[in-house]
Length: 557
Image 1: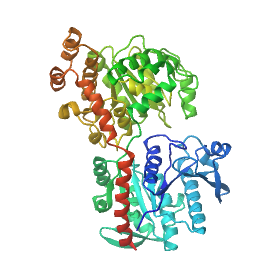
Image 2 (image 1 turned 135 degrees about the vertical axis):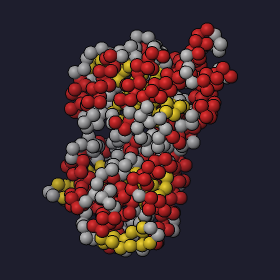
Image 3 (image 1 turned 60 degrees about the horizontal axis):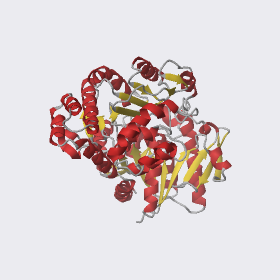
Image 4 (image 1 turned 60 degrees about the vertical axis):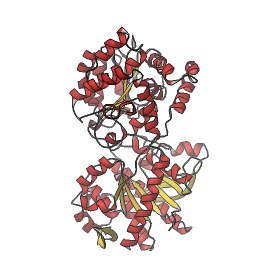
């Protein structure tokens, strides 16, 4: 059977509105599938964006429906790549993606998808693959499977875990999501086919929402081999026979990123035709002294209104109000970090490591780009207070700043990813694509994408540390900052010797003594390593899994 149509269901899309890594994968993967001749579309909520598409004349209404007196309208937007189906109306117009009304939004989203499927049936269009991303898509997966089984149509259902929610499923959850208890559904499990009621499958799921989705789906995928091990350890190894991996990827390249930076910072235009080594010091100097000091008044963008209001009034140096900051008074080795403000990401671990780091590298500069989420003010407040305390070394830019973000990546010496756990970590691919090595916890996808310099030498792309270890984090970060800083000085000069002798890890200092050009070779290795994770390769992995999943569909029917 040829695969013609794929419906990619996701609660985020970079083309509409995104919050984290989830928003990158469905649209980028769909775009790559389209290049391989598959008609892929992304189905996502509006999150307040449909008004823009309507205003620009880009959105065409397909179908409307009513749920509890709330009107839901489904629009087709074909003018963006990949084409999108956008479900709009009522709570789906909230710009904050993950609010207190999240579960109610999922109900409306699911109802809109169901209406769209029925409309497509009327004109004889059926998907071959329904690719559901993360737990927000589980109700859609169940109701679409029920719908198509009554039509005796059997698309493949893929359940794609980007991050375990660890939510529970019971009759209350089913009722709230308008999923019938007693309807029967066909599944393939443990080498056999079953026709079981949804309530029976809930019992078989042991109350775990992601296990329930794994049982319902024809194939379960996640984003790295290490994380698949974690997922199966959580939901059950009995699902291993229909589980696999589709790696995430990045579109970033060093050349294109630098071109984008120069468009926003025209004074850097003379750097475009210079080599990597000539660029980095000048980019860092500009970022630390100039760009940080001149953040536009409309940035950083903070979607959460409560946090936005709190940030507005923070004006203690180095803050100047509304999330803008003063630049550093002097320059130094630069480390950056980005991502959602959650315990998972480990911002607090980095803060705890600063005392040791600055004792060894007193002129180090750390710039954080934390994305606030609901309930994250206590952690953000810690970061803000730390920046006030370490005003010579630390800056915090809460929210989104297109003026600074990519510039920071091509200016940095090190990217920090101290995650307690990390399914994949697209952010480290973006860093490596920018020629920036990474200090990261050895967990999940970070254990696979980053090649430890102590093991791989000049082919390495960073250093691994034990997850949660503040001591290891501080030591690795100070060592790698010094390691990269040595590249700016004449080999075996007094300054170079002082830097190299300050590196605690003997393997790193020995590498430099043997080849002082190693820092620049590491940057080249980072760029090369990131290029190995392309969306084209991810699409190839996806198509193989689709064909494998077709076998499971035949087994369940």
